[in-house]
Image 1 (cartoon, helix red, strand yellow):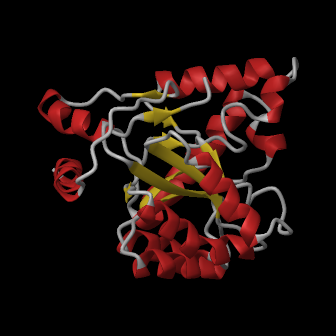
Image 2: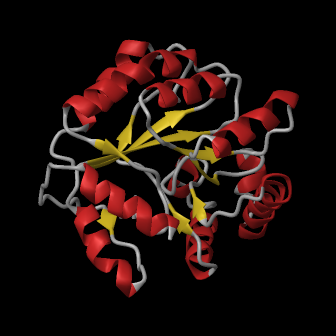
Length: 252
């Protein structure tokens, strides 16, 4: 019912209807009674703000900005055992944001050692989130995305391909992005460059899944976020979180 209600509110709350469809978006399988609403959602101009790698010391500032604009986002979280992180996880939940899976360690040497190692790391995150916060999710974003640098190497390509296949077989949905804010490249990436990267990526897109980062050193992400939101609103986007009914954005 929660997802059904959310879809109804989205449809009623938006007055801009477009018919452009991006080839990277694939509609998820949903219950038959929800199909008309999901079809309507396909035609809306929607922005999905997604934050990888949190919680961090920037999380509370990000949450406060989202509250200011009354926007919900999707957080692809890691396992963070620092004392401040517990409050961050709790605030993500209490403020109505979507928590999805990234990895526990984000250590490529562990995560991509083998398919077994990937799922051991992922299951560790799942166990922590369910035990400590009552959160269950089947939405996954691979560290580096599904087309990361290791997938380009002959020695590790079979591992990544095996992970993607097993994710599907096990009922997970992996989510990439179609706009990279470039904020994850380096802490030296400027506020202006982050905003410009998002703005350029909007051209001819009506469903935008925007990659942002929630990392201690990425202070410019926080500085850029209000302007990014204002640009999206000016361009006619409404905001939503990623769930099983969201048109999938995948690199392959």
